[in-house]
Structure formats: C-alpha cells, structure tokens
Amino acid sequence: MSKLFMYGTSLEGIEQLMVMVPNFHPRRSGIIINNYFNYEGGDGNCHSRGYVPFNIRPNIYEMEYKNLVKYCFGRIENYYLKDRLKFLTDKFKGEVFLDPKHKERFYNYLHKQDLDIHDISSRYIAILFLLTADETLWNLSKDTVKPNGVDFNKSNLKQISTNGYALFQTAKTISTGEERIKISEIADKDLINDMTFKAIINSALITRYGSDIFLITK
Image 1 (cartoon, rainbow, N blue to C red):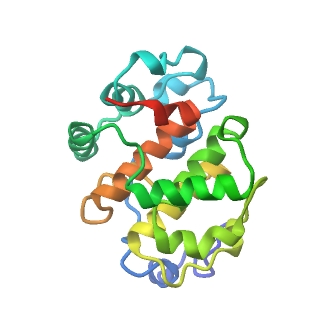
Image 2 (image 1 turned 90 degrees about the vertical axis):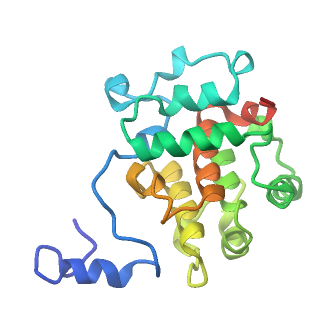
Image 3 (image 1 turned 135 degrees about the vertical axis):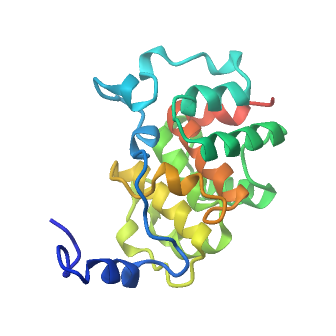
C-alpha cells in the first residue's frame, strides 16, 4: 500500500515533492539498486540482475580495487555510472574511507561499543561506514545505532544535506532490502557529489567482502 494519501490522484506528484528532503530530486526510472547492496544469499536470477553469486565471488586479496568495482558493477549499462566509476577507480590511492575523520568516527564507535570488526556482519559494517561518512548525518543518527542494529525510524533528518540523505537512504537499503535509492540517482553528478559517490560504492564492496575491503591498497 502506498504511504501517499494522494496516491492515484492528480496531486500524487505534488505530495511526493512535499515529503522529500529539500534539494533531493524526484526519483527517475532506472535499475533497482537494492540487489547490489543486499548481496548475501542472492537469488536464482542474480546473473540477470547484474551481480555474481556469493559462492563464486573472487579472491579479494588477488584483485585490485578497480577490478573489484568492475566485478561488482560492471554489468550495469549506464554510461554516467561507468564514467563515475572510472573516475573513482583512477583516483583511488589505497584508502576506502573518505578522510581521516570518517575513519576515526567509524572506529571510535566500534571501540566504544567494544565490537570486533571481524565478529559483526558485513551489512552492519557497511551501514556504519555510510552513517559515519558524513559528520552531520552521524551526529543526527548515532543515537539510533546499536550493536544489534539501527532504528532508522528514530533518525531526525531535518538538518541533513542532499548528500547526507543519499548516504542515509543507501544505509537503509542495505538494512531493509527495500529500494531507497536508484542507480540513476547514484550516477547523477548534480545530485550526489564525488565523496558521497565513493562512500556509496565502497559500501557495496563492504556488503560483499566485509572488513577485508579495508585491506585493499591498490
């Protein structure tokens, strides 16, 4: 059932704009992204969805970053996404985190909760990676993050930026398996900046490979 009161009427589009975060563009048609961020288990049609089954994934220690990205997203026929992925991999300097502050927020939370990164699920790691990528987003959502999961319904996003909202929606996609963001949105340079794009793409790699992705150096 739609959450829109005006669903099916001429006012549906207006209501969609009213409930959106400011500056976040209306969704456009495109490939559904949740299949790329909910990798564990997969389904019987995973090759046609554009990704490779978990049990035949490559050895991460034998691949470079650019090849892991290609392995994960190479089947998607979206010119703008491919262009952004090439720019991302060409600029990769051996650091998955966005900057030292991002890395500090991420590991500080694990230390505070006495969590061993090798004992938590890859999805949880990816969600934490996304929420800590933006300082404002983290300040608004950190109280909803618990060792056993995240209560997204308690997050107050009134002060969030467009890029912070994209990170939040990607984290929610990973957590719930519901479509919250699309490939066409991720590929849009006017909607999502390069740093946010890097965080989203790397969260997909984390979902697939867990903390091992942090060991990639080239």
